Length: 558
Ligand code: NOJ
Image: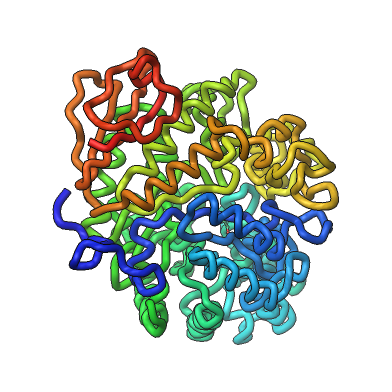
């Protein structure tokens, strides 16, 4: 890789964190799913005070920023991604003043805050949607959403047979007979981004949180906002056949970047400019458009998350994504787990995706499905190796709460306790994402393993006791301490956004070195291998007579 923007000043020193407008380029960002992090008041769900109380934990972990999943008022039809009011805090999890306290505590610890913005849809309890239902067909209130008349002699059929991402129909009827579009659950009506009022209002929301100190934004479904629906709607089968080349009626349309160009102007009203990262599940060739400096600035790359634990795949993903990021003038992002996918310790303990999919006939990336053949120990070993690999890469690393504890997916949540709309809209097909959203275990005992004073909103398995923070804290070999050491070394060793692949004779071994001699070697095979010359700084499994054991990563100073 050549000459990418550096995060160092001209004299080679790191700029002070407060003043560095490029802080996000190589940040270690920790995702908090607030309702499952820490419950301070015993109402069964995690809250903002719970986060404030745990700032010392976050600080000791060594992260640069927190990405906070939605914390707005919500009926939780989709875990908070159904927003009632974009400029307030859900009373179930706190108040605006709790938010201010939380952000002050984070900032005092040198940790930045990225807020999740959900612009594709509101909730059906949002005042705009209530007004739209009240006001009737043809009204300006309805024009903020996507309403259509139905088909059939009395409009009793939906305008098209489209299915929502969570399963079930994507059009729902209101009492006067019209239908509205919802790409996700029926409680999440899609906004009409051709409506100027919608556009202005979101800019105000960005200003509102930026003024409260938010440092950056994660944009939910960033590739879905712009839609252009023809008078005669295509069928779902026809829609599926249309290319995603900027002209698709509902996804990844070129005009979406006009919205982000306007947002960039708002981000730049602040000093330092607010950062943004797009959640855009688009073809790799279209990702740089979202990551452009004139737009959001950075885009999630889920390629590592979708790859098998395999040397060739990891190498190809890294090479390709560093090139893509460079093309956009951005830095790459790396993700192994988040709140939508099976935790990576479990993924790597399951049979490879293709075989599993064939068997289960389902997309396990978006389901909590766990094969009975889970190799829990092997999965965790590979997860630790993959995490060290990820944390040594140039670019920013997104860490999902609980992965630093090596948590596995919770597979056996009873049906009556499940919350994910995917489960309800697909009964029996997809069990949903609750298995990666179970409240964290902080201590080895108690009704909620230290999550809070009461039983948590999703049941925790008994094996959480072994994974608790309190247990791992004192164990030098624990996954928690591995992450702490890795993050501390990473912030010390972080250097220019470049890497050079190391030559190895073994196709199962992947190694790279950063410009300052910080090297990372991963053994994807099972037999121990000899490490290159250098001081070993850290390894994901204990070395075997000085050699790197199978399915392990080591960092070295060469
Ligand atoms: C992506 C979010 O990550 C996911 O959790 C949510 O269900 C959908 N967007 C809809 O907002």
